[in-house]
Length: 210
Image 1 (tube, rainbow, N blue to C red):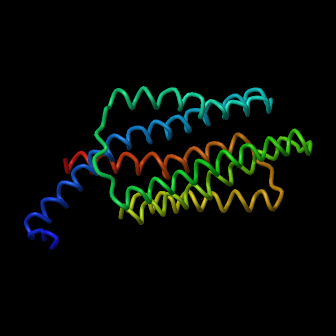
Image 2 (cartoon, rainbow, N blue to C red):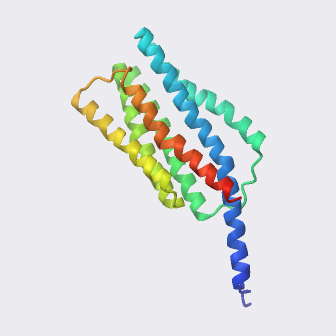
Image 3 (tube, rainbow, N blue to C red):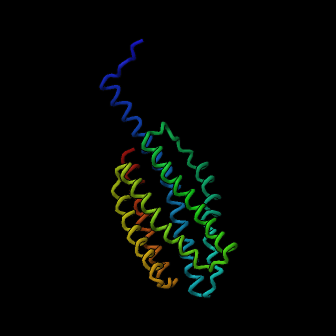
């Protein structure tokens, strides 16, 4: 049986329709991604203030507010937005898989740090490795995301975050102590440039083209 061939007009209409659904999905997903990014910055600022004011490392437990609050807010945002996902393209699947790898790796890294603390009696300095993760693997994933969707703001933002990550890795290798009064503000600035600004740019472009 001979397959029905699409005309040039039908092909153009199909492509246009898929692009439209993808843009709508970016707006919805973009708002949720921005929630995670703003939450990360807010928690970092809170931990920074508490560490500077008290000098007590127990406040590093505040980092767990990110997954705790994020997983409470995400279902609420999903329900409120009710964004139609539409047909996911090959690029969408690649992007999803990239960030799935990052999420799983983050969980593994966190559990590994706990393992070193409870079973190898490592010092709390082991958590510095999470800074390397946040500013090495996440920026590389963002750069890959930007390349896939051809969004320069993601590539540039990821590159800036990666530079800070390489600096962080060198500080740890050189034994330079991290001061909460200088490193955490730098982390916040890097995260804003790397994640929040590109997120708003993507949402703006998607809304303009709807």
